[in-house]
Amino acid sequence: MRSTADSYRARAEASRGRARLAPIFVTVLVLLVAGASCRRRDGGGSDGRRVIIQNKGSDTLLSVAQAWAEAYGVVNASVAVAVTGGGSGTGISSLLNGTVDIANSSRTISEKEREEAVKRGVEPKELVVGFDALAVFVHPANPLKVVSLGQLAGIYGEGGTIVRWSQLGAQVPGCPSDEIILVSRQNNSGTYTYFAEAVLKKNDFKLGSRDMHGSKDVVDLVAHTPCAVGYSGLAYNVPEVAMLCVSKEDGGPCVPPTLENARNQSYPIARPLFMYTNGEPKAETKAYLDWIMGDAGQCVIYEKGYAPATQVTCK
Amino acid sequence: MSRDEERVDARDVAWYVDKVASTLIFVGGISAVVFIVGIFAFVTREGLAFVVGRFDFVEFFTSIAWRPTSLLRPTFGALGLIAGTAAVTGLAMLVSIPVSMGVAIYIAEFARGRTREVLKVLVELLAAVPSVVWGFIGLMIMNPLIIDVFDVPLGLGVLNSGLILGLMAAPIMTTLAEDALKAVPDSYREAGEAMGATRWQVITRVVLPAAKRGLVAAALLGVGRGFGETMAVLMASGHAIHLPTSVFDSVRALTATIAAELGEAPVGSDHYRALFTLGIFLFVITFFINLTADVLVRRVKKE
Image 1 (cartoon, rainbow over the protein chains, first blue to last red):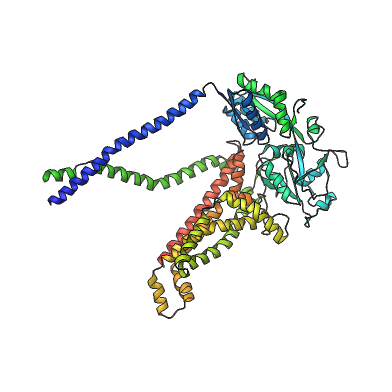
Image 2 (image 1 turned 30 degrees about the vertical axis):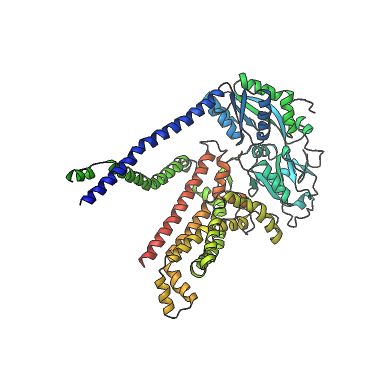
């Protein structure tokens, strides 16, 4: 009996000993958390004078926006530009939500988005920062060199009758089935919307296209697939694919997708690229946008394979 | 001594620790229910406005025209997506059920010692491959392989994603099936052998029937895995809306559609709500798969 009681007491003692440790644990934990948050606050403090510009939107503009942000870090170290992609729609909706300073977009803001902006008291201000030409890519083995907008609509558009390469007069080596494999984009990308507007004249796409989730994926798939045709930004051109010369009318003169042709708008599927701000840009944001529109910024977009918005001479 | 006993009975630290522990365990226990109800409530809340408003039952289930962002007239036909998911999951099951049952029978009934341990570890290692890596394999290795072997223009489709998905579902099915086989008491096998049955007869007539409900559960869990897998299917299926007529056709899965489009769908738009409706549909289907598994298991249990 006695021994049982002793062991009880011993156990109670032991657990109390453990219990005495508990507050210490808690204290340590609290200190750790406090320390961590303090450090974070300190970090914020030392960055206090460093202004962060939030920049979000179009995946087409993503690589350029990142290059701008990086180059601007050298020009003005007190400003950091945080760039994220996600698509033109995401960028504009973030601007309407007030979570970003600059929204990148590869299309103009839609009527719906304008209405939403008015509702939220946001005043989207548009700035053309450069031009993008949508190139039509085929496999390099494909003998086809020229395509018209009408033919493209027949290839991609709902109700279009062009489903075989031979209908375009091309015998594609490595493509015995003669079938045209359509490579497209997911239905809410800016590139998809622009193609629907500029080429399909707002008609629907044919169902059954392979809808890739990025501009680069389109080019990659076309490079590996002799039967395929795809569209993507000019900047995504690689030696493993060929770009078609595009004519406005069947049999008409075609315009090759080049920077020059994109800027002078002679290329039929070239579009301006936009940056949107809420109202007139102010202070740091204004300085950043001015720099982008200046020679240095425009040469960055040129180096990325897009056409600059202004006439500049880059080395 | 009586003082000692009083101290033992007192609400000391151990008593509180006990209370806290049991509360924590209770919360952990019901959290599964809370989460599942919460998820269902959230998905339904986001999708319901579409289901009661814009939703066209006939269009959703009979049209393949999934054009949520059409500039002419948005349509929300999910038949192509449902067919895509069904085709890919079906092929995956055709691949993975025989393979994983075979492997499970070998590991549980034939393999001994070192071989057994090595095999088990390898199977479990297969389960550790992230799904995006499987997708990558589908895109970079299987795609050119299928093009070469079958002489088709594109290797991204039902065959590619079905094989990938089958391989992904196989490890979990193998492990579960092996557990089910191991749970059959050795006395059953001994009794069978005592009656002069060969090893094959023991397995097919004694062990497999005895382990039936575990095996069914394993297979159904694999189906659930196939239904819900997103990344690998997105990458290997070709992501094209299409009613598949051959295994080489590209298809698009329900999950892949949500993954690809939700990020850019404006919050609150018809498109956004339609994607959540797909989510509700997926949720309901998975629920019924699990319910069927449960009913089957119970019925087998009763027999």
